[in-house]
Amino acid sequence: MTDRQARRALNTGSAAWRKLRAQVLREQPLCPICQKAGKIEAAVDVDHKDNDSHNNARYNLVGLCKRHHSEKTATEMAGKKWTPKGTGTDGWPIDY
Image (tube, rainbow, N blue to C red):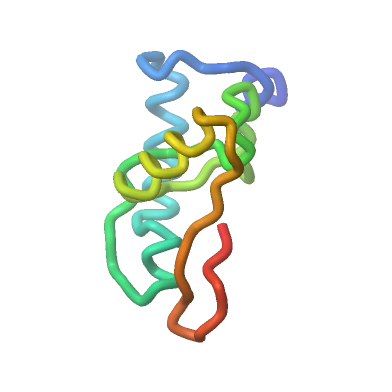
């Protein structure tokens, strides 16, 4: 992906987005939030960590399970900052 592609919104139906989405899910097949909580759940959605659809840099994309992606999206659409709830298997709060 070029720098220009990393800084523009990609249509979710485009070949470029499908390719990038497949790459993210191949590299990260499990939801990291679930993993930190000691659960195994497939990552099925790709999320922009900073909620900026123009920032398609790989470091800004993360695979999430349907539940966590929906929860994060709904919270951010309400104008609030989303933070995962709960603690990891190590007892520390889960971070994103």
